[in-house]
Amino acid sequence: MRRYSLTKRFLWPWSKRDTTPNETSPLIPKSGAAEKEDEELGIVTNEFQTETNNVQDTNLTFPKIQPPYNYSLTDFFLKYFLFLGNLVFTVLGLVVLGVGMWGLISKESFAQEKIDTIGTDPMLILLTLGVLLSLLCLTGCVGALRENSCLLKVFSATVLMLITAQVLFAIMAYSVQDQIEGYLRSGMLVAMARYQDDLDLRFIMDEIQSGLQCCGADTYHDWGVNIYYNCSAPGVLACGVPATCCIDPMENGTVWNSQCGVGAQRLDEFTAQSVIFLGGCLGGMSRWIEQHEGLIGTVGVVVVGVEILAVFITTRLLESIHWHKFHM
View: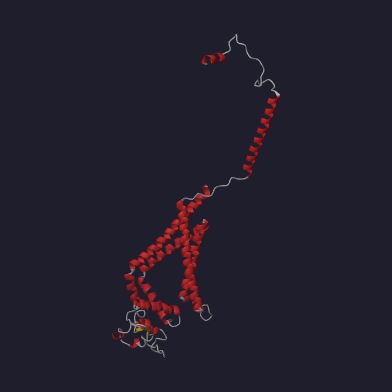
């Protein structure tokens, strides 16, 4: 076989060249069947080229759709952690807002004769705190869910200002302890003077005196600032103190004796110590703070830590949104 192929490859002088025309000869016209096949092949080729051009035109007409952003698992976790955390505090703020509004409405603080004293109403503090907390946390909640850079920046800046204010307040409170004691004394005397007129102040004073087992600001004689407990008052309560100053305001452990403190201011300390608490509430507050200063410090550190964590998560989320916006 190998010898035959070599002899077939080379043309010897005595070999006869095959000059018979056939269909593969390039310069010889093809037969009718071959021309028909070429025409059919040309039609198919033209159709393929037309479809290719149509596809290219379609690609030019319709722009390429960009795929959605591919966030990492950490970004998704931080996003929804920030969303859920702010959602919880938003609900908490709304609850505080509702309690404050309910307190103001139930006491008719918006009535014309009471509108002048609404600025000193404790429920107004709850109302203001609820509004601010709800707005702040709602901003962070919507900003995280919708990936809104503007809302997230507002939320982060507000939390940063809040952290700064808290740190400055702690430093000032530590450096001016004596002045704070004076402010507390003035506030308690005002609350005692309005004890019978303001139900909220009455509730606060009763809770402080019963909880700390104290009476008055510095001594039980401080209740003389109240027009009803003053010794010159004409009523039954004259020269008396509230029942929450009594050591045992319950008779037989079942009945609350609201008259247990009547006439207590007329008694000397030796006699009064068996009926009422002699120590003032300012001293009781100081002792309570000294006993729980570790807990107070821990709570303060946790609150500031949560706020710093919120700022960190917001900053990370802003960086992720910015990167996907300009690099995808």
